[in-house]
Length: 533
Image (cartoon, rainbow, N blue to C red; front, side):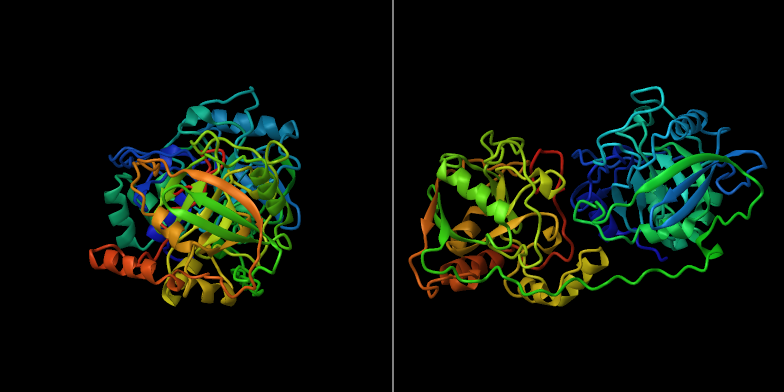
């Protein structure tokens, strides 16, 4: 482990806000406040604890006595984890977990949210981060105690803004090890009020100090910490949901029998897993349409017409849905309700709020993803509310930024790896690589990309809503009558748009690719929104 809690990780956490761990751990980052449950909060950052140092002994690593209740979690395909309980400091939290475990509540549930160098989260019967309840039904207040901190291996309840909203969801900390000087600066900047003993732990064992005081810590892993650290490296989508389910086969209340205590990762013969490189399939976005192939013509009032190639071979349901809605006239007269320069333009919501819309079949549908289609500039993709299974009518067209190899490396360090073929596209055509794998791409602009780039510069309010409506006059399904020679995939194919962009940059506008980190990313507070938090 190494010190990584810097802006990169904070952007990653802000981008990944999906549910469970919430507002008590807000940090200012990426231009907005970090809120770890997906609800947006633009207030100034607050520390989860008092700025006054709580000079008490840290008890996370105190040995249980023989006969004490402990918890044993058997993870399918991963191994067994055991953790000590602290009824003396978290009586309600322990009573709740023991009661749920004895009822078999957790058996078969998943860890639905995993963020490397942060934590793994589970205990929701819905598997979405929005469900679960205590052994008493509803929520309960587990409080906090300064004797228990968020060291690596700590077990705590997720909440919705305070410990009074604890339920069944819990998380196990992995975190990072801090450099002492950086931790002290961090401690002062955010008013964490860490004791000397807590500082020593965070600079040797590691953890997540910025959660202290906002969440009910009630346990500490004493066997199987290597299992937790292996799980945190499992592949996830852009919403931090594991691609392969991480299942708790059983959660049992046991008695401690005096077995060996292995509190620290250094107690294990542990080697960090090597991540497999992303699949390097050909990028199909820029495949010319064939004669008589169905295409989309999208007329934007006062701006112009955008023509889009569709990819039924890679996104059959996504294409069928869009064509069906377009042929019904569903999109005619709707607006682009959310516009963010150097990211995307979003529309297709009949309510115009980001909260509405449905598929041609009613409700939502799962469009999936395909590695052949990426979020290059000009890509057409469905907005969603946490996974591609929540696709509806809302869509967005990417503008994005051009990335240097160094900036792509920065993204990779945050967990956003791209293949060599995709990297070539993002370093020339530009786009939004951190969206790949989380949203259904189903089309690519081949004429009118200059129109999209003009729309992205529309003046907006603080919620990214245009001050003047950007209206979709019509969305038409047409047959392509060309031979492929008229396609203009790249903004460089539009000399006037290139000249306008150069003039804007000369006036001080940041050039594409000037941001080394995605400052914003898909959110889940709206029903369907590739939002920027």
